[in-house]
Length: 215
Image (cartoon, rainbow, N blue to C red; front, top):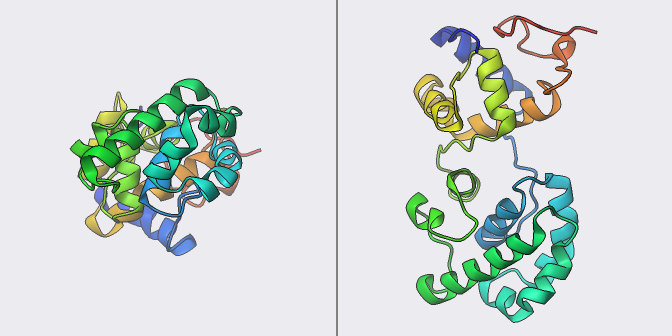
């Protein structure tokens, strides 16, 4: 775990991220809050690219909870069978859709607690939805953010909750809304697990990672 960065170092890092990508976007395709919840739930232990391929046709015919129920478990399963753990995920999406129709009038609730009460929706999924749809400064910590936070010293922590808290505590307010997108994209494409691309990293002079790879 890298040493915690100073406030001024963190400001400089996020100013660079902001300059390079002023409005970072999530990479999961969706058309409304419901399709976003479904897409994020399906993305657990799967790639965004793989989820987008599976949902491309699915969301054309089932973009609301009721339409998903009309499609049914077998129909949904057929659409997402290329995604890991697809059988359990299909069951979760159908049950989630039932709850949304019966308890929320077919609308996706906008509180973390209500979202986390839905089948297949954990804290990370809830935070993604709150951030991407309602633009709240929530921090969804995945493996990429966990790795980057600890390597760089921006948000060190022993588990995802600790890293989430470190992001909220350490990153200045003006960067909070986009923080998790900047970090996930940096972790996914630059600060990679096996061979980080330190030679082309825009924050390499500020990063606390000791084993930088420049070739």
